[in-house]
Length: 79
Image (cartoon, rainbow, N blue to C red; front, side):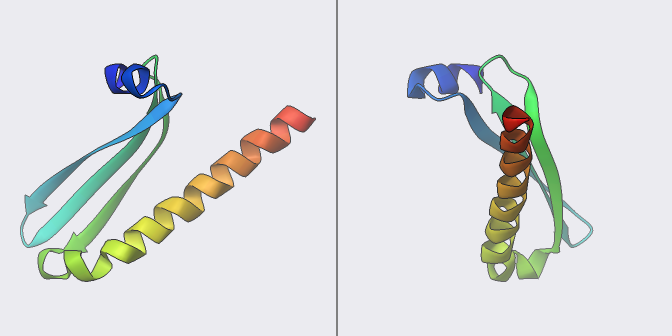
């Protein structure tokens, strides 16, 4: 992730993994800065046959959580 952040000239990148087990899919998503430190992470679990249907829901949840995290960071900077 650090190399990708440097190549893309960004401060952080998303990375993730997906594991299949017992009819479930576990998706792990992380936001990692260019030094390799994890800024945020979450895991989503879905039934294997529902992953495609829940993809949009997962994306919306990630966006909402990132907005909250960033809003908290901005609030800390202001005070």
